[in-house]
Amino acid sequence: MREIWKTIEGFEGLYEISNHGRLKSFKSNKEGYILSNKNSKGDYLSVVLTNKETKRKRYVRLHRLVAEAFIPNPRCLPQVNHKDGDKQNNHVDNLEWCTSKENMKHAINHNPNILKGINDYNKYVKPKRIQQFSLSGKFLAEYANAVEASQATGVCARNILQVAGKEEYRPGLIRKQAGGFVWKFKEEVVRYVEGFSNRI
Image 1 (tube, rainbow, N blue to C red):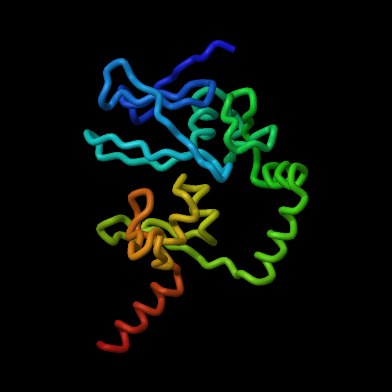
Image 2 (tube, rainbow, N blue to C red):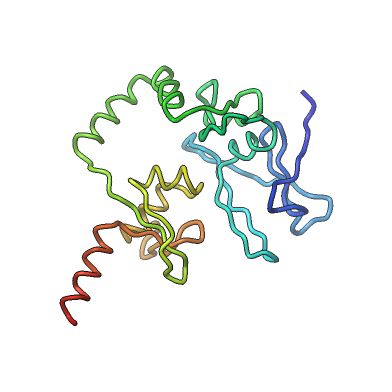
C-alpha cells in the first residue's frame, strides 16, 4: 500500500500522520522529518503534540491518530483496536474502531492470561476516582478511574496515577502534571476541603 500523509487537525503545518503509522514533524524542518518513536516493552506508541501559537498540547497514541485520519467512524465508537494484537503495528490495515467491550474481548482472545490480571485488580486493587484540574486549579471533570480518564482525554493512565499519587517517575522527581492537567484522587480533594473547613 502506498504511504499517504495527512495533516493532524489542530496542528496544521506542524505534524502529519501516515497510513503506515508514521509521524512527521515540520516544526524545525520545512521538508518534514520522521519522528523516532520506540517502546522496548512492546506497549503503545505515544507522542505529545504541541502548538505554540494556539498553546495547545495533546498527548495521544499513534494508532488513534491513524484511525482518526484514515478510518471512518460513523458510529462514533470510542476505542481503536489492533487486529493482530500487536500494540505497535499501527498500519491502517491493522486498526479498527470498536467499543470498549469489543476491545476487551479481542484482548482476552489474544492473551487469555489477561483475565487473571483483571481478576486480581478487581479483587485486590479498588479503582480510585480521579479528578481533572487545569494548571491554574480550575476543576474540569471527574472520572471513575485513571483508565476512564485516559480514554476520555488521551493522557497516559500511568502518568495520571503518578501525578495523583505523587509518585516518583525518576529518582527524586515527582510529576506535577500530565497532558497539561493536574490530577488528584477524589479522596484527597475531599480530605483537603474537610481539613480547610475545620480550620475556619
